[in-house]
Length: 189
Image (cartoon, rainbow, N blue to C red; front, side, top):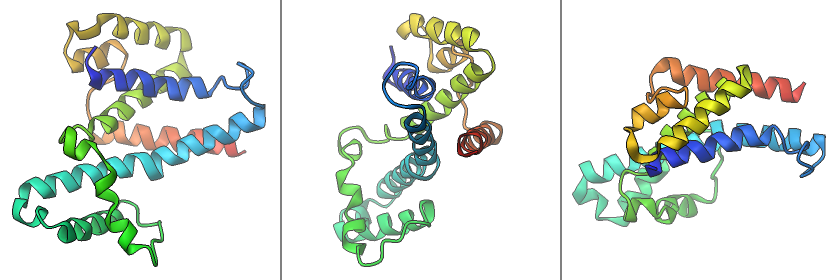
């Protein structure tokens, strides 16, 4: 299976599985509710913005090779991008630590431009989860069918088999936002 689609599979199970933590005896109903809230909030305010920041950083580094050779300029760019993608986080007094954040993402050094695949996977997983919320049996059939295809199909075809679209268009991003906010509202009620 293409690693890019394996990420869709695992992230989909994070969403779907989190709905069944209490039923599986892993935690109380209240703990499950709190864990789901934490997961959804992190997706919108931590995980996805971090990936976008990382992708923007890599583009900057490759487009500005000479500047990217200077760790201080990399630190400044990372700080700038953090303020853009995660403006609500207060790093006062921790600017030096913030500026080193790019050093801890091994993907930048080992697998350039792979990091954005996590965002594509999350977007696919949101669609699988949305399908599950509407028709669990059908969504799981599509999910299993997509997995059974392995590496015999292209990435867009695997998404389609799972009931999703391989796209980052405005409509899909609005689905991600709206689904997250809707679920958070229900969980916090």
